[in-house]
Image 1 (cartoon, rainbow, N blue to C red):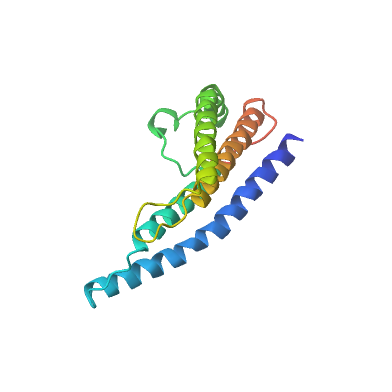
Image 2: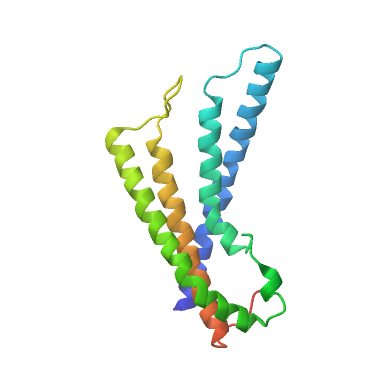
Length: 169
């Protein structure tokens, strides 16, 4: 059962990262057009900063779970790189409550911010007043996916620590 949950969470984060990474295309296009208009025609896009900030935020938050899946987050490997996979898994399990505490606080506070933004129909204060509440909702979804990937990692670490699974790294 545990491995089915792990495979499902991993697959969801793989799929989300695959499709949300495509947002890099409009991000690059908007930046390119803005730079050309700004420096060649002296006519910058007044809305580009707001949209670019939101696109980059969506890419980052929706890719966090995938980064954890790929073990791409920054770690202090110098202390654990010579340890066995089983010992690393045990250390990760010991420190996991800190991760889950942080995720709980992030989900709670970002959830509150998203709900408030929806109720107020919050917008970015600027020339165009782009809506902010969709970004806040996506932020909550991304943090939940990140927390779920943490659960997947914890299950995998448990299986490695108990000898039920070989280490993937």
